[in-house]
Image 1 (cartoon, helix red, strand yellow):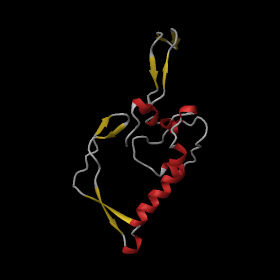
Image 2 (cartoon, helix red, strand yellow):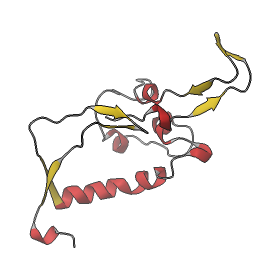
Image 3 (cartoon, helix red, strand yellow):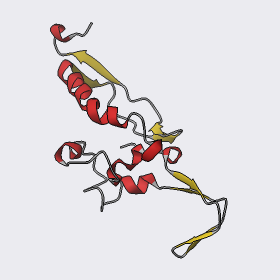
Image 4 (cartoon, one colour):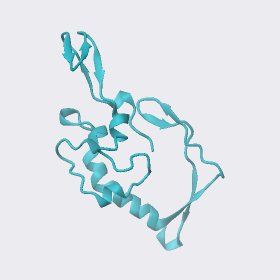
Length: 140
């Protein structure tokens, strides 16, 4: 699972000194939302540490509003422009890829190390062999 990095998080600048609860935030401080904590919060996600992509099929996640399960996409004017596209058609792309091709590992060990850039990315590319299921399924 590759959570969003802090550079793609919501950030706000304190324009004046303010107390938030028991914490003092001086003017000029940049506050950032901890997206990792949101994407791993058991009060929001059932079993957050387990890779379960089917959770998006089993549960009705409203794409409008303030559902924190979609917080990494942003919100308001700064919402990710690919959010609607991804939620609408990525499932169809994936289904077609699985229908037409077999996905085989190229190595015994898969390195899932991550590195922080603009987002949290894989340190080394994930490689696999893609084999057409039959010759009639080859897309020209």
